Image 1 (cartoon, rainbow over the protein chains, first blue to last red):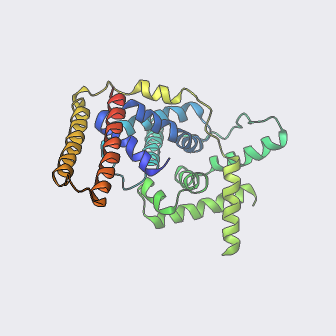
Image 2 (tube, chains in turn yellow, brown; image 1 turned 45 degrees about the horizontal axis):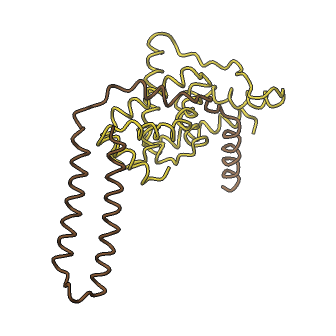
Image 3 (cartoon, helix red, strand yellow; image 1 turned 120 degrees about the horizontal axis):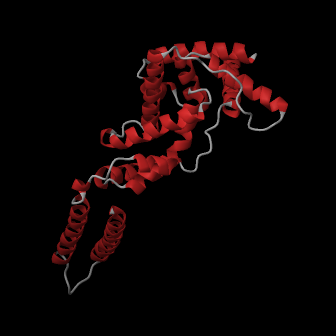
Length: 176
Length: 104
């Protein structure tokens, strides 16, 4: 979505509480947000949709706080990341968070493809939460380091350090 | 660092190809909209105010153009001014209609 169109829709949301405009924003950005959360939750579709819904509802409630300095997408990623981390903290408080690396239902039935998909998805699941976020944002969502630092509220060097470590682990796990 | 860049690009390509995709959910947007709180009616005055302000500004500009226009002699500058005002008025009227239609 072009920046100008995005700002027009946001202005309509802020000034006139235009639900149709907000619906267009959700429609435009929900695939990326849901894919981001899907990879953070290691394939938990139900949790992904819950977190994604909370993300957009929080975005709606706080749209007046959106200053336009970052893109709306970056702002959404930040809310989604915060929602994911709140969920992680909530689960840690109840019990230790178990990373579920049991196989997913493969997208197609080819055994070969199934193995390849499991390897990458299981490798992502082996990373810790911070490494998984950084790898997902950098390699899957293709966000630059500066934006990742903004999303995670970390210094850029810390992000680079996490990324370097995560890449090393992934390359070992994937056998590259 | 060329080797590192290639490895990073290969890793990116592989992760994008084989990561978890967003699950198909055609009702997602509607579910989000259904969960939003009740509409804030206190801002209903904003739309009519903006539209009125835009139309007043337009009328003021037309007044300025006609006040400075010489009826007996029409210059190229005046033709250009009127053309610009016609386009601006058309845009303001169109946006006003769209805004009012979308408002509720």
